[in-house]
Amino acid sequence: MPLTAVTSTRTDNAKAKITIRAPRRDDGARVWQLIQDTTSLDDNSMYCNLLQCSHFASTCAIAEIDGEVVGWLSGYIPPETPDTFFVWQVCVAEAARGRGLAKRLISAVLARSVCAEVTRVQSTITKDNKPSWALFGSIAETLEAELARKPHFVREEHFAGQHDTEFLVTIGPFEREALPVRTAA
Image 1 (cartoon, one colour):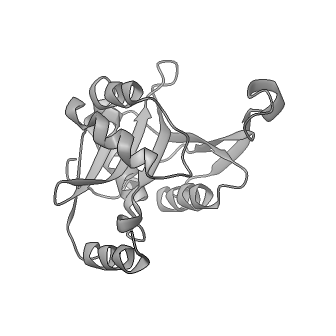
Image 2 (spheres, helix red, strand yellow):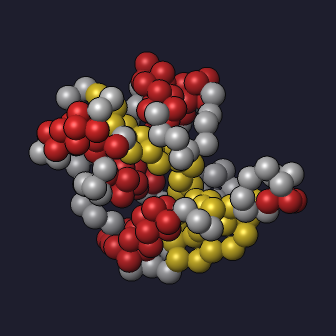
């Protein structure tokens, strides 16, 4: 696609209304394609995305502009830590960037009743992933909560040298009242 087309699309979408909702299982293939189109993300199988859109729909979110998927958040509440929302993956299409969409996706899920007991947000981030560090730093600031990090999956020990160390990022505890007010998504 020529550069002018990309620029034009982004400009047009800058004013377009974004809707955020829970995924449905028929969204799995569209989520998978969005992730494939975002080269900086680790790939999951389409089957994984189908499971996320069905079994984990209550803790995942899709953002759309005119029916086109432009954002995706996958996450879950670990059974051993029901006060924690673990963010697995956040993806925003180029056309929707610069609008705070990743943070809005996380906020939308945290506002759901399934997260009523959640007072911590976690994720893993590689040391050089500046956009993710900025996102989670911004979330910690909004929630007026501490952000802690420690090595979690270590390059040589867990990834056999094939992937950079992932740091476990923990935000919280936070007060539920600190959550930005969101309509149901």
